[in-house]
Amino acid sequence: MICMILSSGLLGIDSAVCLANENTYRLYPEELWIELDVTTEQRKQIDAIIKTAAISVLKNHEKIKNTNINMLDMLKHESLVNDRRINANEKISQLLTVEQQSIFDSQLRKQEESKDLITMYLLSLDLTEEQQPVVLYSLIESQKQVWSIISDEKLSWEARRKKIKQVNAIDKLYRLLTETQKVKLKSWSDLLSRFKREEL
Image (cartoon, rainbow, N blue to C red):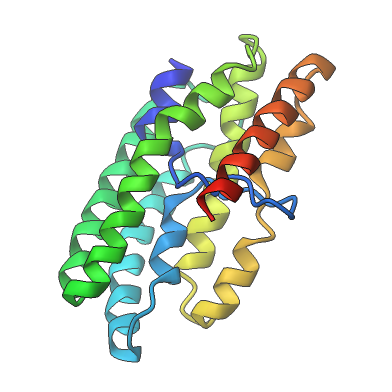
């Protein structure tokens, strides 16, 4: 079940999951939307798309109140998030120039390609049945923070980007692990860091 939830929509961004010289992890593809190099008018249109998606997602987030939530409900929630994400990606893509769209599509492909890797990365931790809902809840809470930030139109895109960097989902996850699991997490982080450096 945890595999289905992770791959359904909770995770998925390019292999910059671990930024080489920072203790910051980027797990949520929504960040891509406010990193696009677009005009002021395009930003306004993209903000409107984000706001519409966020209203639905954040409303549904309210159902995920604590770690006692049913795993099936978590799966339903992540399926909804993934649906809103795909819909927003399509609408945003339609607003872009050919060149912008090419860059955006490339980023989305990298994100999709890395989803299985990230899922495997977390599954390798061999979480216990007791840990699974706690870890998923922690990741979903971080996801909620990201959606709240990217849809906050009172902030500029630049301010939102800075604020999102403070959402460190993996750091929160680290605190929930056993010493053995922490070693595995560190090993995967180092590996992903090397992949990122090689891409650059």
